Length: 389
Image 1 (tube, rainbow, N blue to C red):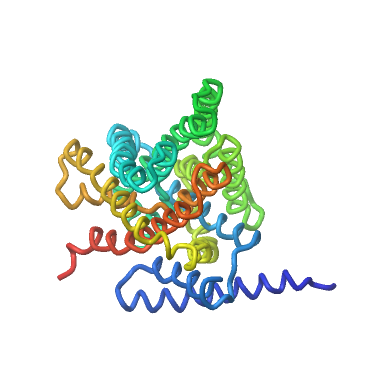
Image 2 (image 1 turned 120 degrees about the vertical axis):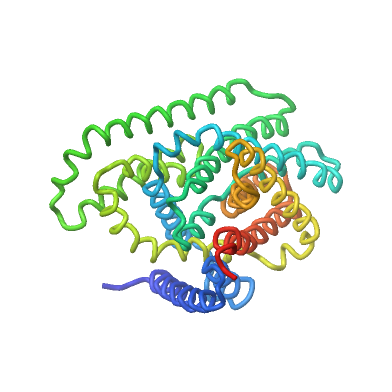
């Protein structure tokens, strides 16, 4: 059997990426920093911008997406549905606050440099989104996935993306046609309704049926295959509804998290995360092109500052509502700082539609880099800083 050069090249890339992540993770652990930073650095250093051993392609992107799906699947499994229901109002308040404060702070900066109201709306709404995968990775690293705060944070991050998708439809219609199209607005509302209706039906089904029959799976790895089948199919369904696939994976975990064998499922799924999540983080670094962002660093840093402050501010109303201390209030907002892959998806859409151009795309990449690197550092201090001398 003849194996093509492209396959062997991808095998080499995968091995180099995993090995590089292992070395970087060990180094960062000894420096008492998050492994996330090291794994993103592997992508930047070994990627096209510097050494050039690794480069993004369809296979690498797929493994990275599988890593993000696995990460959110585990987050869903770790989510206590009853706790989520109790924190429903805080999660909604946190989501709307994060989007609102970000838009208010980012819009004037973009308009000051561009004098373009459509561009300003698009960039400010885009930065209202949250890339929760990175935050979940950091919380998981420090064993904090079962805390009350992370449940509220994850739900609010999902709502963040739904709010941003809805608002971007308004902005895109306004930018391209000069008017809102009611049909598209109704379509997104119907999509949201259909998606959550199916999720809740599956949740009810899992409680009533799966608990009684999933034990009958006797084939080797049967439970693991079933879990990933559900996660992938819900991820696909989520993308057809216009949302990120990771949203579907999270709700798949949420559905399975109510089963009696949840701990067994977690034990089987976790090794998959060890082999895919690092590639997700490396892939973020691979998409950083240093030569394209050099002219947009100043604007990107300004946007990063506004985007970070916007999310941090959103934690204070919720903290006041829950009567938590200052650290917990900041944590609620700071945990939603990352913009990573979500911003890049929306940035690509804006670039293709000619709503934004190269400089602003590069500025959004700077925001992605800045928030990706700062989040693990900030969260590490907020999560365990107070427990160390």
